[in-house]
Length: 467
Ligand SMILES: [Ca+2]
Image 1 (cartoon, rainbow, N blue to C red):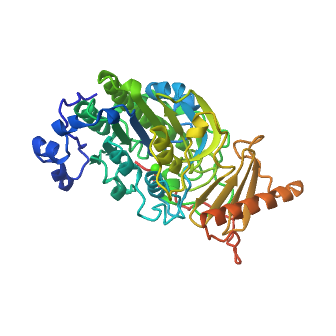
Image 2 (cartoon, protein in one colour):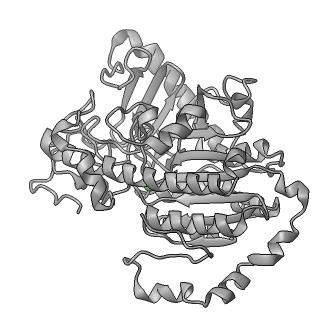
């Protein structure tokens, strides 16, 4: 572990290209002045000081079970476990979908704007106050440290401090320095947008030995190959493990993925410790989320370009802290709901014109849900609709549907779409899907006049695994 600096001094990792370093090469005094830090912050109104802090931990490609306390006993995540165990878990949280293979980018755009994908690609009307702007205007001292690339960097400009840190140690150092500089002067909005556990699943060397590939279990719905062409079979993420998937090649990736999560967990622990040392922890709301999910052998897939449960679109979502009960909910939540939810929790009005819905009534036990179904989408090749029991996935390019009874089959292993007695349910769910498309302004046809073949065979030469 690095020693945290005593004055605000943002770090970059050695991997940062040299041409970017000038941004951080300002003398500290100038940097502090440019960021408006220091004595000026002491003039914050007392009322603003009473607002809780918000620590928003956004991981990259974190599965909904990507923390031990969220249901994966193979993982070692002691610091995040403590947050989850005293917090409120949304078990059915999703990113709405993606129009491109880089699912991260539209996900983060929707998160920062509160608008869905078909609302100008998640940017809404471009005039609505964004999440970072709203926090700043509410008197928060704001910092984001984390991922760049596949991140809507323009939307992060309103942060008082907006840094591209290349790993969790660097990002934690930046945020800890900010806590030490600003604690007590203003409420803090601390946004760690980690690069982990996205491949290449970075961790420092001490974390990799925590997981031995041969000890790791495969998912119950593991398949060597996806049974048909879902429209996105050989994209980069799917090529990080060779075809066919085997126990050997898959668990090697699993071990790295878990090590990267444990590494992230350790540095989250350092931030929490810094909040405690600053006397701020007890009044800090902590949010844990992932920007998108990731298949790790389920259905023969290892990417995020699919709409299965525990696949590309389902994400972890946990909120903990003052005023937040311990508990969980099956309510359907989207990442775009976070912005209006935080506004609600802080007593701020969410802007008009956004699509996200406050989850605060669910947290307060006043509502069981904020929407009756969850719709997700991936480019023009996949659409899904689900309620608390049934899920339909539609592949418009091959005119194929899958129907799953999630109550009996949560891992989507038994497709009922072709069962004669389920024809009415397929029709009902297709109609609900079309209704959701109309609601969101999604014009993707659900049927192709010239459907492609659903048959698929993997590339003849095994793809090179990601480093
Ligand atoms: Ca991501």
